Image 1 (cartoon, rainbow over the protein chains, first blue to last red):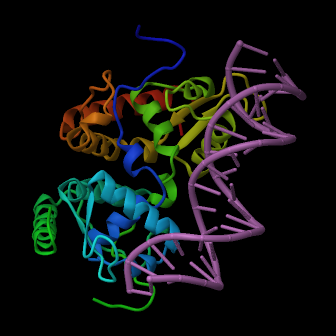
Image 2: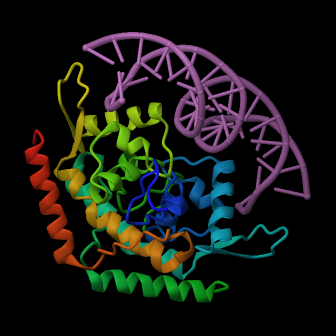
Length: 140
Length: 140
DNA sequence: CAGGATCCGTTTCGATACTG
DNA sequence: CAGTATCGAAACGGATCCTG
């Protein structure tokens, strides 16, 4: 029972997890802009709205890419932090970012400059920093 | 590190281009499953619907990731083919795929096995094959 | 028959007002 | 400040229809 009308593709993509319009943007903000609080994500220039942001953060926590620290019931602190699976997305985002800069330079904002893809040392260093931060703020 | 109300992130992501739910799936099918025709994309197990598929293909052609060959006005052949920017996404998809397999093995379908990330030679070879195919089927 | 357009019910989004 | 409630707008998904 291999082949019916539905043909399958020989790779899995992970797009079920990060394939929507906002999820990767939130993760990017945590990685490269050091954002930790609900309010900070709201202020990203792409302009996510609060209900969608709440939804995506909840999903990220549920799937284990992010943890939420602070009072579980009601907290006005709410610190979000990347877990290991989340941190592991760094090379993917770097790779995508480089693709965009090379093939669609027009979409690049003036301030956009970090260019990690291919720089293994820099990637590893940033990942280490994120790991340390994760541990510091309530880790795992 | 500067801060106003709209804080910006130091990298551009390319998500404006490939950040929706379907675009990367179509590209993946072209890369790894050798799909070329409208009908074939429709049959992917994720189940894209024909109106959405038509829309995404048109957008991919417009943005230059894909070309459409056949009679420009009305053709019942309609062969879609990846351009260089499209082909350049291969490492990104490979990287994402590996991430998913490592951190979310549960999402992996049994048939999913290709594992190119990190295998530079294999990536380059597949890209070469795609370039040849692109030239063969109406190139540029 | 293939590519794709059209119609329409359902889901998701986006903006903003609101609550603890 | 961290979210929720609400509601109109847009996108989706499915079926069907149209055109070579």
